[in-house]
Image (cartoon, rainbow, N blue to C red; front, side, top):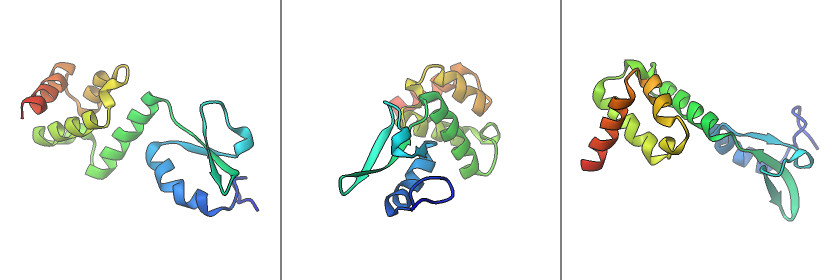
Length: 125
């Protein structure tokens, strides 16, 4: 049986939905899976495929989630909170993404130099 989205009405889909949403990924029917998609099976049967976002899309998704969590644009946060955001993003690998520092600096309303200072400060703290 399938739901309105064409995806199976299956408990596995309900179980992974919060994780898929948090990652900014999407689910597709297993027969539509691309080589880089992760096909999830239940009792040996392919149920859904998870299409992971590109790393740059993930960073944008993470920044948007942080804004929602703080209830305001990241650029309006105080310096200490911005430093905390940078430490959190570093722990999540945000700066391994090409142009990650520039993207984060833009979201925080600071210079790249400031982001590097925040990163250096967290290494010595």
